[in-house]
Length: 388
Image 1: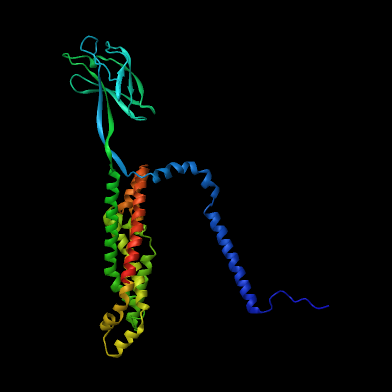
Image 2: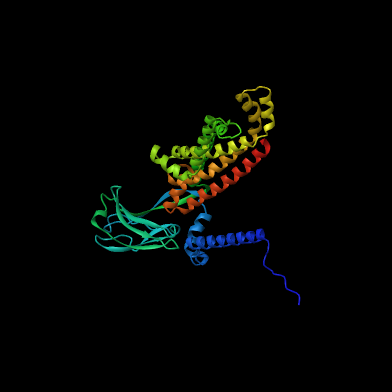
């Protein structure tokens, strides 16, 4: 009989690789299981709880974009108290109207008042307009889906006819008139979005002014190997790392307590985080330059400043421009989050609308954010393609 070959690997290096890959796979599976349990993943709840989330989702999908102008309209019905003190008024035959069960009423008499063709499912106040011109509060009533209501009233002495002037039953309506026009929400959102755009722009510009020179101090190929430049290099790198480790929303909270809630706090927080982020990107661009021009200038006896101005700067301008434009795009998105902690702009407006359950207005803000982010993506890509 011929011996069967042993399927187990005999090569020690292959065995170690197989063992390492097996341990790595087990570690990944363990991390996945722990993450699954820690996050309490339950996909079934997405479907069983959908009826709770649908009203909110529907409100976001139907933003408040257009509305008709609202004009207050007052409906009145003359009702003399007591009878014979003034001429009664016949109710209108059609349209929004009030109709009394009696043409006049005696003191303390109770009667029924009906409303027809009013705004459906609306709460209104039915009241008395006294002979003096002042009004006497009545009761709040709600119309049904057909715009109808029925309420019982009592003719009290205060509504009695005076000097031949009878009291009137009245209700005030808010009636839409004219064609559709941009709603007030649209202008509020535009105003908040402009604040966000310029907050992000100012933060980016301030950050560029600070990060550009600091990036040379954080570039290993620019700083010499002597003790002082090396110390400066490590200190600058450490500062970039420290400030990049903080989320912008944390910095915005600190600045909000420092200088007060508003766009200024948001802009300062965004500037500090952007300095660290751009500083790191700029320094890496400086480190990745072609050393040839630098060596050539050094060989001709150029000093350090001349080497930077003529050997490094021309190579890094395209990268600096690209990073700057891209970070402005990023800052617009971050500004919406910063607004949640009082940083101003569209984020603050969005948080107010959500906290007050004005979900249609919140939907308008969300769609505005989507439109602006998409536009920024497109424009920044075009600018980078043309100038870098």
